[in-house]
Amino acid sequence: MTSSLPPPVVVTSPPQLAALVEALSDQPAIAVDTESNSLYAYQERVCLIQFSIPGADYVMDPLAGLDLSPLAPIFTDPGVQKVFHAAEYDVMCLKRDFGFRFANLFDTMWAARILGWPHVGLGDVLKETFGVRTNKRYQRYNWGKRPLEPEALAYACLDTHYLLPLRHLQADALMQKGRWEEAREIFDQVATSEPVSHAFDPESFRRVKGVRDLTGHEQAVLRELYVWRDREARRHGRPPFKVLNDRVLVALAQTRPRTPKELADVPGLKPYHVRRYGERILRALGRGVRARPPEPPPPPRRHSEAEVARFQALRAWRKQVAAERGVDVDVIVSNTVLWALAEQNPRTIGDLTRFEGLGPWKRRTHGKAILKILDVGH
Image 1 (cartoon, rainbow, N blue to C red):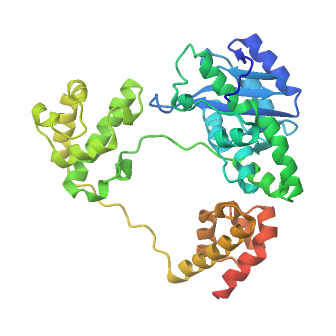
Image 2: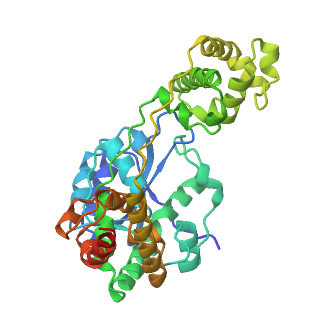
C-alpha cells in the first residue's frame, strides 16, 4: 500500500528556517533530497529540499526567497551525517544553486550496490524493504509551480522519510560484510562531485541522434536550427526539447522546406509549431542552406594495441571479481579508471595514487592484482 504519512512541515519563512536549522543541528544523521524542474525550465533549479529526522519531515521551499546560507554549516559538519539516495545529482545541484559543500555523506543507492542488492532504485528499495509504494504520477511533476498539491508534497516526503531506517539497515550490513571502509570511500568521492557547466555550445549539435547520417550541407542546416532552438528556448524559459525535439530538427535538415506549406508537411512538425515558429524556422533554414558545411571534429585518440590489451586484461579481472562478490562491475572499478590505468601503465602502488577513483581502500584491496595484470604486458 502507498504510505500515508503525516503532513510535512513546509518551510517558507525565516523563522521556520531558523527552527529547521536548530532541529537538524541536533541530529547525528539527517535524510536529504531535492526536487528540480529540469523538464520544465531552460535553466533548471532546485525547487524543493526535503529533510527527515526521527519524528518529523520537512519540505523547504527555495523559491520562497529565503537566505539558505544557515544550512551551509550543517552540510559541512562532519558530526552530522547527510543521508541521500543517489546523492551525486543532488550534491551537484545544491553546489550549483547555493554553493553548499559536503562532508560525511551516506548514499543509500551506493550502499545497495556495494551490498549487491538486485534492485537499487528508491521505489524498488522502499517497496522491498518497507512495503511502501510510491506514486509514479509525480516522477515528472513540475516542482517549480506554486502552490504545490498536497499529494505532491506527500510524494516528496517519501523520498526522505525512510532513508534513516534504511541507512541503519545498510550500515549494519556493510559492517558485517566488511564493506564499510569501501562504502565510506565512495561516499567521500560522491561528496566531491562538481556541477557540470550548462553553457550552450553550438557544436554540441553533433550529439543529436542521426547527425552522422546527414551530409555536410544538411549538418550546416541542422547546426543553424540547433542554435535557433536554443535561443527560442532561452527566450521562453523552456527546455529546448519542448520547443522542437531532435527528431524534428533532423527531418527539417533533410527536407529543407522553403515555404509554410512545405513546412507543414515535415514529419513530426505539428500545426501549432508552424503557427508559432514557422517564420523563424524558415529563416534558420535559409541561414543553414547558405552556410558552409561544418568542419568535421578531430578524430578521437586511438588506443595502441598494447593499451587495448591491457584494458581487456583489466576488464576480465574486474568481471571475475565482481561475479565473485555479486555486484556490478563498476562497483569494483569504473571503465574510466580502467582506461586510465591501461594508458598510463603504472608500475608501483605509489603510482596508483595518481588515479582519481582509486582511493586508499581500493589501492590496498586491488592494487597488487592490478599491477600484476599490467606487469604481464611488459
